Structure formats: structure tokens, C-alpha cells
Length: 544
Image 1 (cartoon, rainbow, N blue to C red):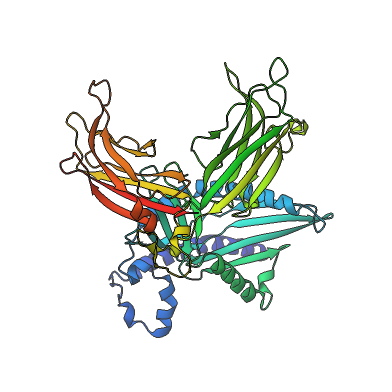
Image 2 (cartoon, rainbow, N blue to C red):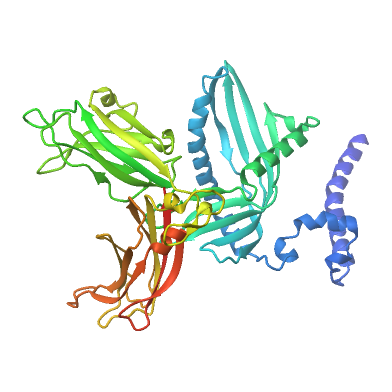
């Protein structure tokens, strides 16, 4: 009897559950109301205070402020390329931090430090609105509202003695309001020379930090301390008006930095150079240039059949960034036929030079800048140079004087402009654009600048009556160009196989007195021998 009851129970259980589920399904379907109710939509200002405070931080700026625009398309674009962008950014992080890690290996009993895992996760940042600011300057200003609630996995493995310690960064949340300035705008892709980034308010940064698997942010008081410390450090570095400037283009298409001074280089002599010629001599000369510039390198004269040549020749180079630029010196053996043989080279960082002081350097020549190359241990002679770095005077300390060199108005220092701006300096000429220039046979305009017998010209703009060049030219002068004129002429050059010669579209001769005394001049000049043509020119004089 017990066995029969057991089998009947199993059968009842097997059939009862499916039948019960089926009946419950039909009851749920047919008992559900068919009426559709509209959702309740209320204006934001009708929410109670606590509910409003909860949702306000998450409302995008394009809802709260009408001057912010939606860019959902950009967020979709970032979301689609995020897996590839993640790998690219992590690769840059690894390559940049690897030499920094190497500096700490061997210190504090640290044997190794490396990434155990590095990924920014699957959640990309989002922009909750962007504002484009109007400005009269040659720049574009963007102010995006950036939010990122990410799931990165960044784990560092540190090995002390034989013990390995892991530090993991997880659950990052960032809320920031940066200002991105693209400047100056130039006629070369990507059409801006640098990017300047600053923060308009202190950022909100939240993250988890695990040490050997344990969350150290759970320690009472430590979380708030780390959060506030990070906010203060970031604000001290990048909170407006502090900026992070990233150069994009070099000085050949639009200078990222304004000239700061002139480097005077005197190539004195060389000592015991290598014998490169068949009869045990060399014909040396020195080539010198500054890093970061695409201007042609300057050269000394050639000293024939001389292993201890003396030049005593002076050169001037325009300096834009003395903290990063270096003077590059290459010594060559001149050859009448074929390439010139390298005798050696050396570099001098400009940051090692005290401004306005002359310093002599005796440089050991090497084959290249690779310190691990065994060829650099070979004697290649020495090069002696004298360097003087003269800074330009601050534009805020310009003086205005009468044309007879008597002081008329001194701003904040009691010295005469006769000494402040009439000595050596740098004349900067920027040919911006021209309007209504047209030739009889063709219109492929370019600008020709002639000063003291030196000629410079802009690129050619094809088939245009309103060319835009925005190109800057420099003239290093021993003395201020008083009572002198600079000649600027707009010309047109034939294109293709046409036989029409070059033709002038108009010219202007500009007196430089006002530039010297005022420091800067920006004018529109009507072209002579042109019906309606004008040219826009900006000139600056920087005294040493």
C-alpha cells in the first residue's frame, strides 16, 4: 500500500506542476487590464525639494541652459569606436609611463613595476552638452560638459624583494567642465596650431582603490582626504586661468609660441678633427639650427685642409621655447663631389644658458645622440662656441616717444626708449590676406616681401581674388629700422604650361617708424597700381 501511494504521489506531482503553471499563465493574461494609461508628465519646478535635488545633477546642460547644444551623434560615434580607442589610449599610457617606472626600479627595494592589467572598460565617457563661445580673437573656444561613469580595470604590480603587491583602480566616476581653445587658426590641416585645455570649475572625481584585493577607500576618513587632495591638485594645475597647452603644428605653418628672444651663436674654432681626406686632412664647416624649426640651417665658411680651423663667425637664431629647444651643431667635411662626410655633432639645451650672459662651451663631438652607441667613445675632436641668449622686452613695457627721440610718456620704468627699443631686435611681419586683387591674364596670387635686400614670399593661392595666407616672416636686425620702409607686393604666377609671365597685382611701401615706437601695428593698406585691391598686414617689433 505504501509503494502504491509513493508512485501515485510522483505521478500527481509530475502532472500537477505543469497544469498549475498553464492555468496560472492564462489567468495572468486574461486578467490583465487592457486600458493604457498615459504617463504623468510634470514640469521640473513642480517636484518637491528632495526629489529635485536628486535629479538636478543628472539633467544634461542642454536642458538647463539654452546656449548648450546636444551632440548625441558624437556620443554615438565615441561609443562605436570606444573598443579601439580604449586600446589606443592604453598603448599611449603604457609607452609614456614605462620610462617613469624605470626610474623607480632599484629604489626603495623596488625590483619591478608594471601593469598587470590595463583597460578603460566598456563604458565610454559622454558629453551632456557643448557650448561654442564667440570671440574676436583668432581662435575657437569649446566648453563641453563631460561625464564618465566607467568600469576600468587598471592594476599595477609592484615587486618588493620577493613580495608582489597589486594596486587596482576601479569604478571611476568623473564630472568635469573643461574649456578647449583651438588657436591660432591657420590655413593648414587640421587648421589650428595648438590646443589649450583648462577647467572652469573643480572636477568631481570618484574611484575605488584596492590594495592586495582589499578596498582601502573603506578606511574611515581616507576616502574624503584622497578625494579633496586630488581635486586640489588638479585645480592647482589646470583650473582656469591655468592651462595645459598641447602643440599640434610647428612654426612652419603657424607658430605655437611667440618668439621669446634671439640666440647669438659665435662659432669660434674646432680642435683636432678627424682626418677624412686621402692626404690626411679635412675641409670642415659647421651647420647649426634650433630644434622644432623648419627654417634652413645656417652654415659657416669652409676651411680647406685644416684639422684645427678657426671661424669666429656670428649667427642669430630666433628662440620660441627656451625650456625645450636645443641648439644642434653638426660638423661636416666638405666634398666637391658626392655627399659631405660627417665629422661629428653635439647639442646644447637652451635651458642651460643664463639669459643676457655670454658663455663659452667646449663640446666633445660625437657620432650621434645615442649614449649607448660605442662609436661615441671614439675621439672626434672638439668644437668651441660662444652663446648669448637675449630675451625680448615685455610688450607691457613699451614706451611711446616723440620722433626726435625725446621721452614723451614712460609707462612704469624711468628709462628712455632710445635704449629700450632702438637697439637690436626682431621684426615680425605677418601677411594675413588680400582682397579684390585680380590680374589681367591669371589670378594665382602670392605676396612678396622685400626688406634690406632680403626677399621672402608666401605660398600661391590658386584662382582667388581674396587670398588668405596668414604667414609670418622674421627679420633679425642689429638696430631698429627707423626711417626705413618694407616693400610688400602681391603678384600672380601662371599655372600649368601657360606662357603668360608673372604679373604684379599691386604693391605698398610701409614706413616702419610707427612699428618701432608702438611695438605693434595692424593695418589694411590699399595697393598701388590696383583698382580696388587691399592687403592686411600685421607687424611687430621686439627689442632686445
